[in-house]
Length: 209
Image (tube, rainbow, N blue to C red):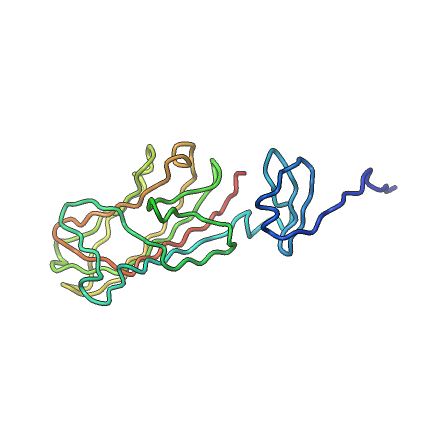
């Protein structure tokens, strides 16, 4: 035996701009061309589709300042001096226009909810005048224990040879990291080096919200 549901819900068709600015009511439903939203706990939650878009999604940030067109457009890393790995977000690609997982102004990885899980890929080109003795240390800073995400990256193609670096890691956001963000830091050890063509690709693999 089957029965009808008790209530028929009216769904309002709107543009995404309305969803982003509407006064949220629990249980109220809105539909755009891409998603079905329902008001829940002061948020408009996507109830269909269950994956992709705002539920997960990704962003890519390309630095357009340190392009490597010549030596003046490469970031010089002085031996032993820690710096933030910069990215001006001169070119940004998103799976959904509302998503931002990197704060360009403050140069920090950011997120949306406590306990979200993120996967990050960092790529750049690099070179060192003394490749045999030089390496680059990479780590995250800004919240307790996140500096355990760190690695040493060597130079394998010889002195002053351009080499691609590819770093991949994942983490969840605790309350501290959500509030303060996470900053990528690099240090050239054993000699000076240069980096350029920096790209951050960030995907949210779990939406804790």
